Amino acid sequence: MFAPVRVAEAWPGPGVRSRAGLRDYIRGTVGSYYHPAGTCRMGLDPDAVVDLQPRVRGITGLRVADASVIPVILNAPLHATVLAIAEKAADLITGRS
Image (tube, rainbow, N blue to C red; front, top):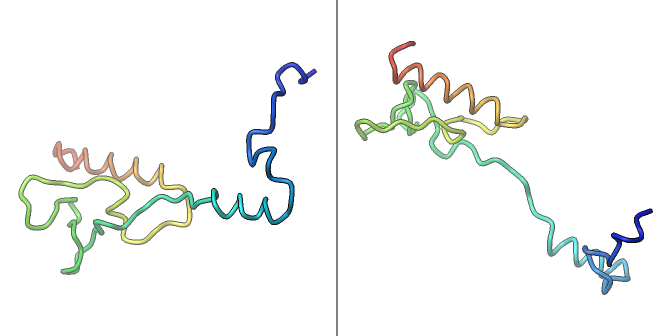
């Protein structure tokens, strides 16, 4: 059934035939999949970059509303959290909150 579409092994490729070769391929190609967070930490302390409104301290008119304001990296996908941050920031900017 799949014979017409089968051409050749794509990864790691037909040249990799040993455990050592497979190990080398994996070490050379596998990387981390992560969502950076906390680079513009929100908080009340003097080290926080963003206040609770989420205004960048010391720069008038600039706000940050993404994963960088999360003070600690979550043990979960960030998508829903970032959407909540963006919604709250929109409410703050438009005066709805």
